[in-house]
Length: 398
Image (cartoon, rainbow, N blue to C red; front, side):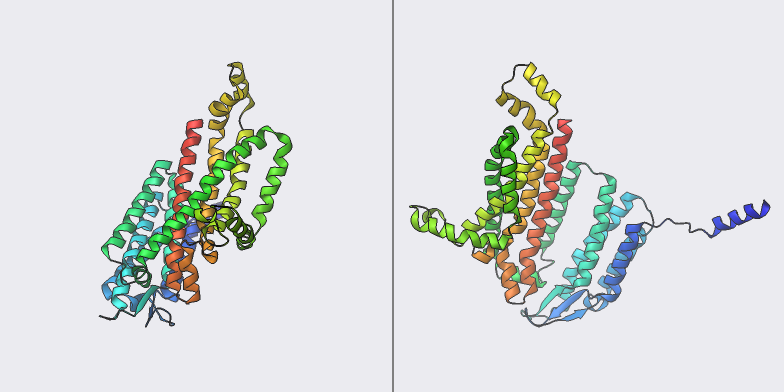
């Protein structure tokens, strides 16, 4: 008996006193790889030649390298054990802020004075570190269970911080900003086209899809055919659908008076808009059907007992209760369309995809990022905002 007690006490003394966080261990691996094995920045003589990859110490002044290493190591040490969530959140934010500021310092440090041709770009080590601490921050936010208003507020603060960095000129020495400075006017034009394609096709899909979804819910015999047709459209690859639409839209432009004058033609924004509209219909229609089908029968019975007509029940009972589900479909469409609008550039539809495909053709990856990063940022922001709105509508509905 005494031996058993002694063995138990010995095991307790030998047990690891700190509980490890699984995500923290993953973040430690990523940060170790990003700091020790991966380059932090790439220096190129001009925008298209192969560059020289450099680690943290070679990319930054001594003070900046020391600051970066201290911030990254501190945040990693906080992430590995099961530390308080608020501390993990703060550590992730600080690490992200230090990375964002010091990559600009690396650009100024590596660019020779007076050299307008040299290009400095973040290397994959920087992106690995950025991903690791973005993961830490988002995980901490999820654990903190921030409300919808707080999440939108965090998004606003992040947008403000990035805007201040852009306005301050901290990133002006980076290659992506040099690509932007030579295309500032074109960038604004293509950004507006991108937003018009994404939001315009969404608006058209809502105008058509909501009545179609209501009809499919009310009339059972048309529900399966409508959803099956929309499912078939959804399975067609986007580039193939763009190509399929070129011929009929070209015929309409040539034979229908006034069609060409309002922008309908075989290539350009028209086929891209129509394709995005067609892709948007299934989530809107399907979520409308599901949302209306999920309305409790008791609510409809109570509305009938109050003497409401079918139209009044739809407007005052069914639609408000189904709205969170319908809004989920709209969220899916908007995030999808922001990403897919990039492909419109292949058929002359404009948008941020212009820079992506120009960069691929010129083997200029910073030009690719000039189109890709704003697209990803807009899709992420749209998802955060609409998720928050959906949560608020669900609370109001309950």
